[in-house]
Length: 158
Image (cartoon, one colour):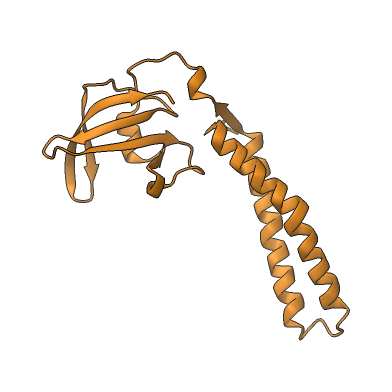
């Protein structure tokens, strides 16, 4: 299986979620199933079926996180020598060439992407267009509205 790039922060968030699921959520569900079983007939016991469904979801999420962490290639952007080149984990300030407004994005792994926090997935069209480019380069990005041209104003490794 291919390695999945992930920042240190993204790795820590997944580890914290895994710990919570295993040490808090799993025991809660086990207890809920036990209590529902004690109430008798399981065929018509909605509490039992809801708890089993929740247990299935939690176990699936645990397996998913464990698989992602086992295939993760954790990258510490701060340990990479500074450069003006856009790479995974870098923070990029770009500007639409027709508008004088800067936008800042950090290129992260798929699980870490959150547009509200200006974190875009390394697999997104925007990130793929930016990777490998340098400060001062202009990049054309195809969007549903057409092609938009951006200038890379600054690249930071923070």
